[in-house]
Image 1 (tube, one colour):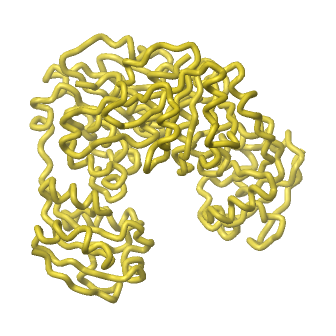
Image 2 (cartoon, rainbow over the protein chains, first blue to last red):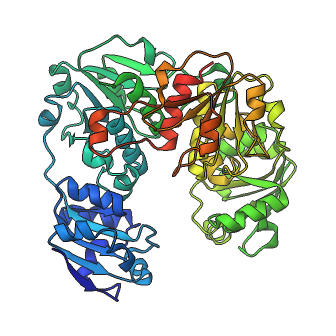
Image 3 (cartoon, rainbow over the protein chains, first blue to last red):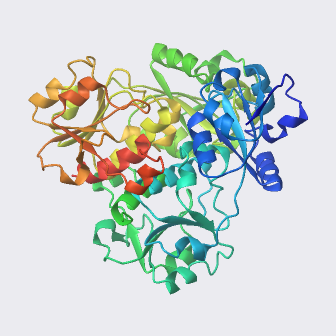
Length: 271
Length: 271
């Protein structure tokens, strides 16, 4: 059962896990060093705990201790209760959702383990925006993609903003991170995956003309530059979402990566 | 041809159009009162000007006067040139894209005029987040949707953030705003549109089983609560994106509105 501690100073060292949540660089090093991540809001906290992540501590406004009572009963960790000013003082912004939890990361499985029994996987090369990573995970999980594999530089799915935007889907979709970008696709090919590279290039095959496959891996690239030329070259097929001619004439020549991922997961990666 | 004016004080009254860009309430009333909107970044400014919006003024760092020289040559408006500190002082945030333009809104066409020759339209009920409105416009334009109709409370597509996220697609996709939410769908029905309501409800028809139609209007609801019960009742058909059983069991039960809109536009609204 959790133990309740009222805190009144943003400088209280027991709140160090919650420091300056909008300072991306600080958070990255702090979270890596301590192997922690943050969940924000009742629903996401519930899902993080249900997914087996050990709770280091929680920090919330008093009004949230009631709605979260069953969760707090089930964990063995301090619950820091603070007023809104203290919350904002620690985190650096008004915590509208009123409740935060600091949780232990679990060891990530290997790429081999994650793709072993998968038929449909998503491979994210350098998607750098946490909002996009969270939204893509939510899509992929909702549509029944089996797993995700991340290139070394893809943004962290357990970063607070990604967790929040995913609505906890980062706990539902198994994923692994490859250690070797250069040869990262070789193992997938060996495992018999048809490797499809999503690109806006006019020369690519439209989504709905892709030959069927037993196992399929869809590659998504970064927000600005798309997939690297190496990965484009390594793919079995380059595929595109057909754009409308009138739109092209008006200068609308692509979708954002989340919208493109949604259409591609729906079209190519359903079970 | 534009006239260049160096400004050094954030309080300069000539910069009033650019005041406190993150203060949503202030911006809404300021922009409504003056009939203006803001475009941010080179590409979006180009598209706004190309779409026929008259330029009131521009505000930029000196480094942007070169890349935008052809646009500045073509407009008859003051160009305020400021250093980064002055820019941040006026707008309230660091203007990474370095260039802003204040432009005149054009009178919106009527719903009748916008749907007159349209076959595929999107109808947004109360989508309140500007990021979502921008992303949905970008999708709809790219995939060849003919027009959008907005309910009275839908967020403004010409709000700075919506314009930016849309990459200027808000200038490419014709749209109108209905004045009467309650009877807003009656005219579309009279015009012969098949009216489809997108909802996550299990009782709805899966996207790929919708009967074909000559003219089709797809309704999208707000981020939190979806479509109103009135609009759900008024639709010819309720349609859903099929969710995966495993995902449902893991608590992932819906997509965000932009991802859902992308899939629905791709599946139901292509020309």
